[in-house]
Image (tube, rainbow, N blue to C red):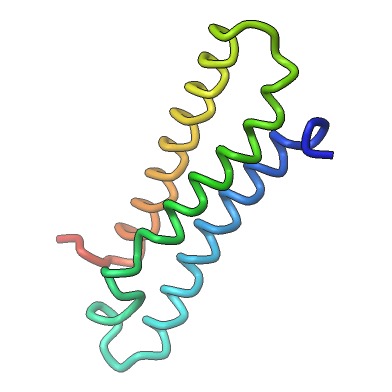
Length: 104
């Protein structure tokens, strides 16, 4: 199953963890008295994101096993990594700037 749907599963896992973390943060902030100074603690803020990148990459690695040639595998992983980082930045900064957290 991972060979056939690995790419979709990796992206779904990655995006769902990132979005779930932002929803939890927003929920904590919304239920708090001070919206701007509450939320997920900064000491644990990046742990779910790192897990999303690592597990998503691990799931993706099953999908690239069928690709012949080391160069093609490296290119495929690099493209997915770069694209996921850009998507991550767009989602994260849209949330931070859109809600007004840590912005001017």
